[in-house]
Image 1 (spheres, rainbow, N blue to C red):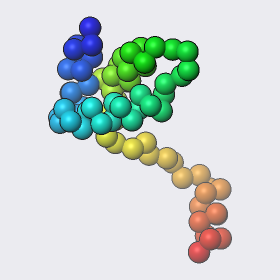
Image 2 (cartoon, one colour):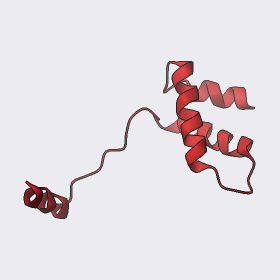
Image 3 (tube, helix red, strand yellow):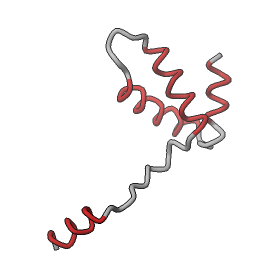
Image 4 (cartoon, one colour):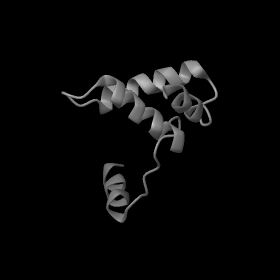
Length: 73
Protein backbone atom coordinates (compact mmCIF):
# COMPACT_ATOMS: atom_id res chain seq x y z
CA UNK A 1 0.00 0.00 0.00
CA UNK A 2 1.13 3.52 -0.63
CA UNK A 3 0.77 4.52 3.02
CA UNK A 4 3.47 1.98 3.90
CA UNK A 5 5.71 3.52 1.25
CA UNK A 6 5.09 7.02 2.59
CA UNK A 7 5.88 6.02 6.16
CA UNK A 8 9.03 4.26 4.96
CA UNK A 9 10.12 7.39 3.09
CA UNK A 10 9.47 9.52 6.18
CA UNK A 11 12.33 7.73 7.91
CA UNK A 12 14.73 9.86 5.82
CA UNK A 13 12.63 13.03 5.48
CA UNK A 14 11.09 14.37 8.67
CA UNK A 15 8.86 16.98 7.05
CA UNK A 16 5.85 15.67 5.08
CA UNK A 17 5.64 18.83 2.98
CA UNK A 18 9.28 18.41 1.93
CA UNK A 19 8.62 14.74 1.12
CA UNK A 20 5.73 15.74 -1.16
CA UNK A 21 7.88 18.33 -2.93
CA UNK A 22 10.78 15.93 -3.45
CA UNK A 23 8.51 13.10 -4.56
CA UNK A 24 6.71 15.26 -7.11
CA UNK A 25 9.99 16.52 -8.59
CA UNK A 26 11.40 13.00 -8.78
CA UNK A 27 8.20 11.64 -10.28
CA UNK A 28 8.28 14.26 -13.03
CA UNK A 29 11.90 13.43 -13.85
CA UNK A 30 11.56 9.64 -13.74
CA UNK A 31 8.16 9.26 -15.43
CA UNK A 32 8.21 7.43 -18.76
CA UNK A 33 5.51 7.82 -21.39
CA UNK A 34 2.97 5.01 -21.68
CA UNK A 35 3.36 4.06 -18.01
CA UNK A 36 1.01 4.80 -15.15
CA UNK A 37 1.86 7.83 -13.07
CA UNK A 38 0.88 5.89 -9.94
CA UNK A 39 3.52 3.25 -10.65
CA UNK A 40 6.19 5.92 -11.09
CA UNK A 41 5.18 7.56 -7.81
CA UNK A 42 5.37 4.23 -6.01
CA UNK A 43 8.82 3.60 -7.49
CA UNK A 44 9.99 7.00 -6.24
CA UNK A 45 8.72 6.30 -2.73
CA UNK A 46 10.47 2.92 -2.73
CA UNK A 47 13.72 4.68 -3.67
CA UNK A 48 13.20 7.25 -0.92
CA UNK A 49 12.75 4.44 1.58
CA UNK A 50 16.29 3.17 0.94
CA UNK A 51 18.14 6.44 0.29
CA UNK A 52 17.99 9.96 1.66
CA UNK A 53 16.50 12.12 -1.12
CA UNK A 54 17.58 15.39 0.48
CA UNK A 55 21.30 14.68 0.22
CA UNK A 56 22.89 15.28 -3.19
CA UNK A 57 25.14 12.60 -4.60
CA UNK A 58 28.81 13.17 -3.98
CA UNK A 59 31.02 12.88 -7.02
CA UNK A 60 34.57 11.72 -6.59
CA UNK A 61 37.19 13.93 -8.19
CA UNK A 62 39.17 12.22 -10.86
CA UNK A 63 42.59 13.42 -11.94
CA UNK A 64 41.07 14.69 -15.22
CA UNK A 65 38.60 16.95 -13.42
CA UNK A 66 41.41 18.37 -11.26
CA UNK A 67 43.34 19.25 -14.42
CA UNK A 68 40.29 20.95 -15.90
CA UNK A 69 39.83 23.06 -12.77
CA UNK A 70 43.46 24.20 -12.89
CA UNK A 71 43.16 25.22 -16.53
CA UNK A 72 40.01 27.24 -15.91
CA UNK A 73 41.59 29.25 -13.11
